[in-house]
Length: 246
Image 1: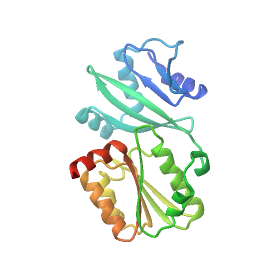
Image 2: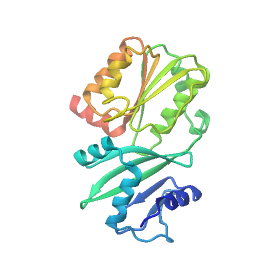
Image 3: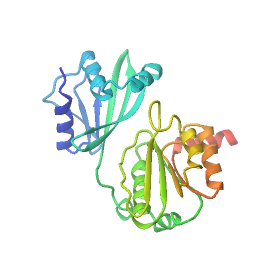
Image 4: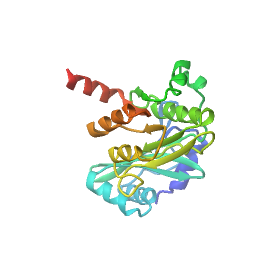
C-alpha cells in the first residue's frame, strides 16, 4: 500500500516542484525541470492509484461527483502547512494524479522581473489587467504577487475567484475575500462569482481562470462599471479567440 505521507515528505525534502503519480511507474518528482523517480518506493499499482484518490478527495461527495461526471478534478490539498494544487484525471480506467507544491512565501515583483509599470497599473480606479502566458510560465505566481503588492500598499477590497485557491492571503492594508469556484464550493461557476461581485462592493476583482465566453463578458462588464479586474488568461485561449474573431 502506498504511503502518501512519505511521498509528500520526500517531495518537500528534495524541493520538488511537482509530483507525478501514474500506475505502472514509480512516483516521479520534477526537480529543476527533470523527472526523477523516487527509487526507494515501489512501482504504483491500480489499487495504489485508487488509494491515492481516496487520500486526496477525503470522502468529499461533491468532488467525487465532479470526478465521476467529468473524469477530471482540480482541487487542493494541505499537508504540514504546505499547500498542493492537485489535478486528478483518468487513464485506462485508472486515476492518475499530478500535484504541484505551492511555496508559502511569494516572490517580490523585483524577484519576478515584473516591470514597474505593472505595479503602477494597480492604482488605476478601473480597467482590465491580463496576466498571460503559456502553461507553467508563472502566471499564477505573478497574479498572486500582484494581489500581495496591492494588499501591502493600498486600502482596497479585493475579491478573488479561484479553482482551486492556491496561495492563502491574509488582509493587511487591504481587505481580502477569497472564493473557491466549483460544485459544493463558495461559488458554483466563475461567471456566477463575477456577476455577484457587483453586489459585494469590491474595488478589485481577481479571476483565477477564464473558461468560457460568459465569464469573459461578465469580467469586461465589471471593468466597464468602475472596477479594476485582473484576469489570468492562457496564451492558447488568447490565440483561439483571436482566430475566431478573424
